Image: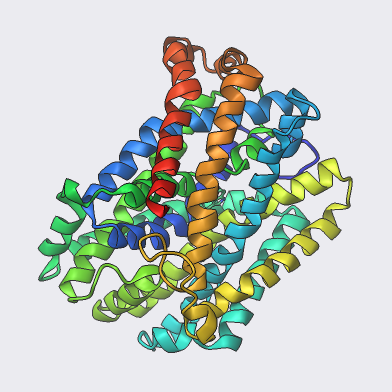
Length: 448
Ligand code: TRP
């Protein structure tokens, strides 16, 4: 992922980087906890529905925008519609990247710390761990520094090469954990919660949470796929690439749920614990398994790497903008963005017990986000602003750039797309913006 406006080494290189961005804490940490907070299986169904009918077609729009203009989100919009307010959609994307990275880095820090916690043999004491202000701040800063070092040093290719080995390993470990968890005594209640939908649980806020999670998990709605798509060659088949990315991403998330919910119910814990859910359940699961501590340490190592390929992508978006458009040196940009993110993320880092004020922040209604500051930021940037960004970008692609030009771009390299062209144009112009609009409206309607 060098930004000398190069291209990915191969189609596989792009899929790997984009899947690396998509697969991360969103699948293993965030997905189970939002499923838990939103009533289980009905939410899962809604999520799958949004991934297929909104996420995937929308992903092509971002990729087409990037490949056609070879620019970052702001530059791409500027190139197609110079000096128009549409550029604000690009800026919203940059802001969202900061916002997401600011809390994502905190959780990534915990994940990293848990490698050593597992090795030390102390699987409990999570509450003490996340409320230790120095420890969480240190881990957060460390994780951001590693991310910055990689984005700066351009050793991202090394990461790509590693991912080829490590991501399949994550998959294998996860598969082992699924088998272990579903055979636990008491697992059945968890499977029921996770897989047997109760449609009465669907409300306006669950819909936004499911839509937001679909965007979050696929790394959509803030221009990441524009940025990564800008390094793609005209010959690449966007349709099959996008399909593989969505498939890998979704399979990993579904598997994470198949570990967490059976285990959770077997342990008699509550599914609505929020951001701490996975960190409470998994270590306890590891402590029950023979050799579990080593498996656990290895699992958190792989998860840290999955998180790293995501934080790299989040940092890359504002860096690509500042380096391309503002001609600021890449080195300065990387460290400045990382430093600002650190400052913005501090309240999130301290919001799990270290600071009473940020732990019990409670600005947003409870049906939208738990009281802690981190959950607030996660809702505002990880759900709301991704949905808003996707709305603006789909209207931009569908109406301002023009759905036909965008479809031509997708079709280059993907001849088979011709068959879906008409329906895609309908989706991007009408269906996708309308669904997002209604969900947002409904949310604010309930607000009033
Ligand atoms: N998709 C990543 C995850 O699931 C998080 C992420 C990385 C992201 N880059 C993004 C989310 C861009 C939205 C936009 O862990």
